[in-house]
Length: 216
Length: 216
DNA sequence: GAAAAAGCTGACCAAATAGTCAGAACTCTG
DNA sequence: CAGAGTTCTGACTATTTGGTCAGCTTTTTC
Image (cartoon, rainbow over all chains, first blue to last red):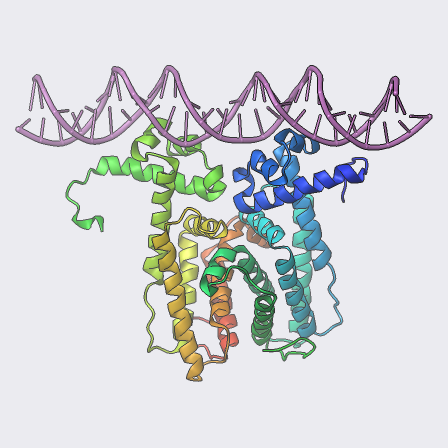
């Protein structure tokens, strides 16, 4: 909601954003407990007191970062077209999720950290939203199975496969990089991951690729 | 290992283990940075100074915990029978991994945290070991594919599916519990997860279940 | 059973860290 | 350009935390 209830003063907000970006990087790298306000200040190239001018406390700052992250996530995860065919929905979902991971690796990792920590710092409201969305997709999958439009699978496990695998890729950047012996994952790497994931998920469901996406 | 040790002081080691177990719980819950020696001491019901009697520093303590965890992991992950058929190897691997997760949820979560943090606190030696094992399995899978004993898939992605999904289960205990509305995952839940995972992975590979495990 | 060793602890300490605040330095308006 | 409001900051504080240490207690050794 963009809303700290503060007046919109573009210049001031630039500084604020600067600090927010630095905070995102810091929280990504060190987690909530490990993050240091001083380092955030250094990275943003402002004195520490300036951080506290914009954000009363560390937890306020983290809230702001998390809120950004979850907004991003929710905006992208929102639409499911119930009428469309399973293969298309699943493929779109996967490609979108991989894309998000590519565009916002920091956001993604913070999200994952938060999940790992049992959502200790996430508001009830946002937790509920995330869960509701998952349950919605699961229901959809169950319908498809009932209608024999795909092979039977535990819907939650299927969602986990998708979620965990993309997530895992983003999370374990270090490990993945060390396996592939590269310094960063390219656009191609992500396409390859998306293709591979689509293939695997469709096989699990006994579905044929629709063909509107590329294939390996 | 400790089997041949001569100077064993059982009483002292009991205390040591007591502290180690408490530390495991603490590190699981709060991560390295968030962990507090005082809380570990409280949980172990010893004075804080006693913790430092056995472990010089926080990082020494964490090393000890991590070492335990990785030993567990490696012991279980070690053997791959190259001659056996793919379906059996994969199924065994999955069931063993799920079992580990069931038996040592704390260990598993610490391992995951460490991974998420880019192995910041893990020794080079242990990192290399983990990676080597992954590459070994990947090579095996590539051979099976070349011999047309299973459908083509990116071996790393396949391993990730297995790894990430079980891991994700353990990691997101909170979320999973809230979805199923239970307070703890039972033995049955884990069996169900293992069955489901085996089914999914075998479908990905175009393999038939061997039948020595149960099926859904 | 006494001396030595090992196990244990309360009381400290130094360093680090989140957060405060008085006032300087800007920016905007009339 | 004066004055009001906003943005910014150096210097400070309160508290928390990992870690030390002198000496007490228990166990082992001879």
